[in-house]
Amino acid sequence: MRDFTDEIYKGNQQADAFVEHHNSEMFSNLMLVVNNDKYDALFQKLPTLMQEYYEQVDAMEKKRMRDQAKQRFTEIMLNHKKFELAEQKLKEE
Image 1 (spheres, rainbow, N blue to C red):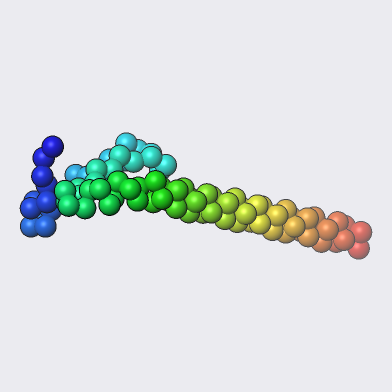
Image 2 (cartoon, rainbow, N blue to C red; image 1 turned 90 degrees about the vertical axis):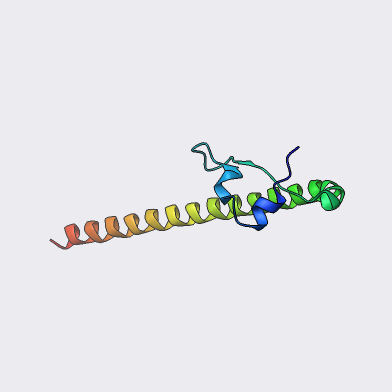
């Protein structure tokens, strides 16, 4: 295991060296660099951190879906209103 601590604190490493996206919006590889003294504390808290992360992702996804549904409903209602106005104009002629 290599110790990157000095390189990170001196700014010798770019952040993108620790994250890979592979052209995906949903998945990334992330490398964590943790001081040995704090490793045990992080390892114990990691399940809680992951659960909180996925709860946030779920909440954001639910909001995105609600927003999309609301936008689609608004579009349908506007189209319906335009249709009613056009139909009313035809009746008036």
